[in-house]
Length: 124
Image (tube, rainbow, N blue to C red):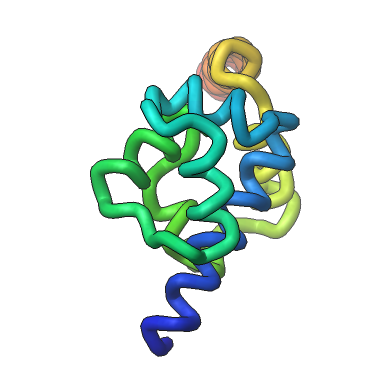
């Protein structure tokens, strides 16, 4: 992938995730702690300026994403993960951090309970 294509990918991914999170450019800039505000986000999204890794990390944190979500066009390959699990993970990733944590904790409790239930049935 050429430099121009990488710049376009980064700019389109910042915009895509910002819109998916329902944030304006101003809101994202504020959450990311960018002093130059929405002008910086506009420049990044249009590809006029390519943010450095430190700024990308701030933006990723503000969007509650791993850094690679802003630099990879395709998500990491998970060939052994069933499609329904991948779909659930993508839906989960789109939630706010607090909501995501609640779902993860509740799901973990259910799975742990199922494991104990299965083990106790086996022992009987």
